[in-house]
Image (cartoon, rainbow, N blue to C red; front, side, top):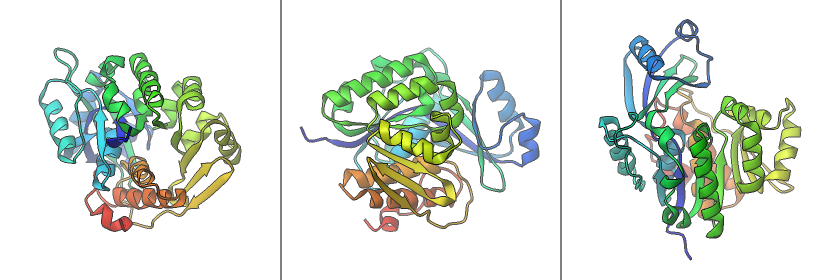
Length: 325
């Protein structure tokens, strides 16, 4: 059966709040620069009160990937849990406005919609503090089997791996996708997230993942090594296709014994929020068109460069024109 979607993302449905900050602010708040930390309600209120003026918009790693892929002309859907509240309505409106199908029913009477408090330092690094709220309610019952079966690739966000119910949802989604002859893609999302669930991630990569996205730090954490070549050799054995981003060094795409080194696209770094999300979007949008792997990597690099050239993770330029589509 022909896929009606090129890509279906499953991940945390989050409203982002971005503000500028300096290193001293991060230190005073006990934050590890450039990472993502999970916070509780009290932490969210404390950090939000201390932040400077911010801008709000729909976010979440896989949701960002979906929005960028849609901007590149892909047919895209997204599954993720919001609450029946104002931020939930903002999220739903925003992601649908990008052209992404969003059928998940909101959570009634539970935790509020998730939000991520993002501090961007002058060097463009982003430090994220995430209150998951309604996201943790996402479970196997929220996996829309018809949507998964209709998508060429189901793309799973590593950040969602924290709650046990979400891990069960991942396994269900993978089973449905493979049962329909589709592909499963996983992004590792964050080295600390990988560290918390390393063996579970390893099992999922080996057993269920067809296309893996990771940055260098995440890959090294996954394989418990500081040797990049060793980690690449390991991932070749465990997954059919992997795209590994290396910041200004570009990316490495490996498939079996094949390797493709892809240059980064030079741009002024304003805000690194969403760079990896955009790379995955560009790669998968090109992959859906059947383009060669090196060209998929180039699309990823172009999308990532656009993402870091401005404040916020959603595209502000004509991405199709930038990639030459």
